[in-house]
Image (cartoon, rainbow, N blue to C red; front, side, top):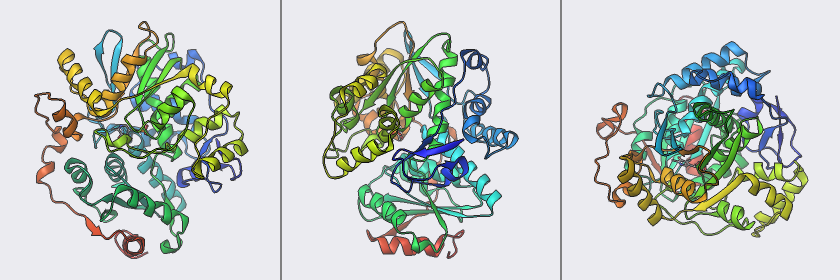
Length: 469
Ligand SMILES: *Cc1c(COP(=O)(O)O)cnc(C)c1O
């Protein structure tokens, strides 16, 4: 499989190189040159397969030529073997024909484990084969950091540095990062905000001289392997609900358009999906595009669903690329306009094309809390605030009651106690067994000033299993 850039200028890469690449050299994002397509008979024949075996069938075409089947199978079995629920991604019914796909049974209790548990193993496999080591530097406001650290903690060939804003992430989220020890794991608390952290990561990609030749790898949601892993659970859910003979709809809480883009790809690979609902919080750039063809940056608002607090939606470029007939020059032009502070609209036919599949809703904090309370009263299920946004959007935007509606349950409610408390749901939140002693565990973390040079010096001092590069 070959991968091409959405801006049309960077060289095509194979899977192995795309895994190790961040942005393409032309500033674009990598996408498969030709998407695999499965027949209905083929998809139907996968009914009842264990999750890792389904994952093998869905993802195999993407890694062909880079990873032999037997090795890939073994990696997938290990990856999804660490999930605490036997079904890996169980469906729970909320209402007639309405379901939550629980994607929070991984080690860090959010859906990011599906991709990052795999990414860590794939990186280590490929690096071992090449005899190389890499450094990961990532910024997190919460979920990504812990999932990336959990995914890489056993990697022999990766040192991971995760920057979070000092005193500005929740205690559960901080502890999920700082209580994991390993000579290749480095938590850095920056005396600044999340944007400061993210700027440092960007600057480090732009000038990598501080790494003395060691390669820097991205683990944010622009990494193709993360999107790829997320395609699988759309197939998994549909097969449980009568697909592919019957079509299914999905409502997806999203900020960076990563998770929902995976659903769009599943559909293009042959899975009958009737409707995809983009569910955002008050940071609603995606909703403004879907509802009014305006893609314009606005100020950032802190919400009760912090994992979707974004101003710009990085993976949206991948959809724009398809909407523009895969014309890289057109995308480079649009992104230039955007960067210069302007927003943009796309031509009417392109927008109408997107609207055939996508609907959207922006949900504010008050509505999020109302939905948590409502669903708890109706079913006894406690939703996390991101999932609640998905449920609200599903109920408002649904086109057909006959078609099963699946809401992606992106996190366990225990990760977001503020929202649950504000919703007034009188249920004590309990950590799952594997995290029950989280608040007693020792923590390891280095506090650094909001200074790029200090951070880069720290990385080069510790980037080789805790030793200097
Ligand atoms: C990361 C995250 C999201 C948003 O994911 P996208 O990649 O922006 O689609 C939603 N919910 C939770 C709990 C998350 O951690």
